[in-house]
Length: 95
Length: 490
Image (tube, rainbow over all chains, first blue to last red; front, side, top):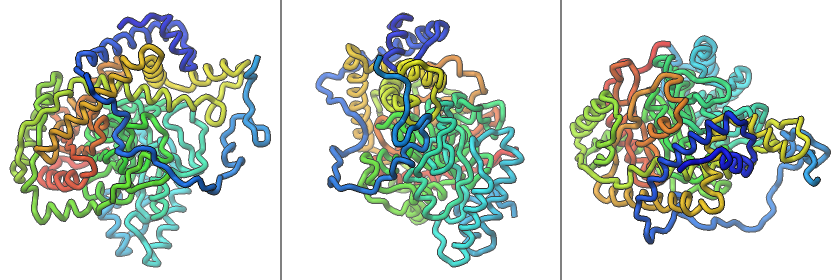
């Protein structure tokens, strides 16, 4: 599966990554190799096989909707790169 | 007495008898770290004052006769486990300033017994890698030969145990990240059954594959650590309600009954793989003979989808990783690019500068495989193949109790040897990946030294929640194999 540099750019944007031209080229090559290898999966007969999302043998682990103690904003915002009272400050979102 | 040579079980015995103190034991390790970790670089963070404080507290408890299994025992933690108030980086620049405000459940369990948390161990960034070369900070060196990698991603933890910088260590395993470095460093590494150990507070790489497990000097210590670490945790909804036996009973069982009655299966697909080092083949053949000598019935089994495990893993894990790592965006924690003019620029610059190359590569593979038009062909199909792999194991375990294989196709490779070619690196995980895809437990036990002086491990896998068989067989095997030398001289 050949991945073009434009595709790398498009996927990088989806993943919110900035890829410079050199990296775009390297990644396009490496990803093409990896996806080529992964293509082998299409040889497997998966007819009627239910996909499995993991090895946990449980479904819908629920609990009572009870309020439990919360650490509070000072703990929650302790690692905030930029903070204003109980808010995280971020660069402009809406243009 | 050279305190650093004691195993967890031995140290506990001497602490109980008050022949040594936790402060003495901790100091012995801190001295060794001070002397040798410049060369090995197993640790990202060591806080000697904090460790000695914990040791003093442990000694107070021991004096009162109230000590538990791990009171005063110095343990290293892979830097992917959240430790309250202690920097936790996942070996990534994006978290280089991150200080968790709570402890992972596993960490809480060690603290509840007043263990000494001696340091945070180096790893491949966000647990992505098989050599610890992907750490954003530095490479950890294999204590057996410092030109070689310790394996990964729990390379720091495994090296710390092999170099005797701690009594034992905690690692995580998503595709082999405990077992492979344990194999390369000549120590014991166990990946428990998926759901056996809580993942709460463990920074997630691939949520359906990650498991936390012990890395120790011997199988007795493995059983002790699993006893402490395992058990249902309501804070982890993938944590299993399966009851916890006393895993030391596995050793007692060996002492009473040996391994008679056990059957071991060797997958024929594993033996026909290319690229297996002759020393590894010899080790495996000797291991098989050793187990036969101990009364294990050996038979050939089949895991028909073996050849698709690497492909399935390298879709599923990156897909899950792309979702899990989306949270590192500079908004709420970690490093943020402060020069950005708007939110999109901030996200992109923060992530691109903060994540290393392998992490970015896997995020992109994952994003691609989950993107519109590709989801069914890649992630959907990989999940179906995963179901088939789980069936393979189910069927195999109808006729055997444990499955045997080498851990890695070669002993440790040289630092820098494989890092340029990601696909070659991925292929070296062939023996360990299926275990995570199926969720079964697996252990690596030291099984020999290569002609180049590097350790090689034997892998045993068992049915879900049957770590007991791994402890029993692992212990029996360990006792029958002579390790020359047992630990490297630094």
